Image (cartoon, rainbow over all chains, first blue to last red; front, side, top):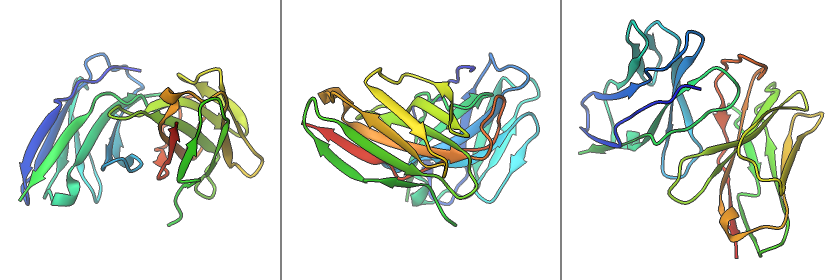
Length: 108
Length: 116
């Protein structure tokens, strides 16, 4: 699976949009981009995934660049409960290869 | 909605003992995955099963084994426990986990294993 690079930490003000970037320059054509988050030792929580088109669900939006070498997860109105480690994962096969992730802290 | 169930939630064992962790997937999910997360580390994939057959293998020690049963639940058996095995163990489930599967995985709450 392709390697991903994320900033180790980010801060966001409550109520503002949180934009979490991810680089995956070696992604191959059939690999999807997944985003998960983990809140304080709980089980990782699925957020969203996509192949090449932008995706949106009730939790977040996923913007994938045209060359698919990077993506951005957008939490439109961050709340304190969104404080977590966010993982960007590129996968084709069964297992999820978690990288270092971004620790997002939402501040009041 | 029903989620992945793991038992026990906490387990304390001594070195060289054995432990068995259980995972009950979301109904209709036929694929189960096991992950290990050490203190301050990111989750690491151990092994997965689809339709009772091992489908992928990650960094699972030889002292560990796992299986999936006909009702799709799975058990992770750990023998000759070492202090370094102390970790959170997560189980996840998904629909069809065959090659090229893109179904999202749903994680359970984890089992915290402490080896003393």
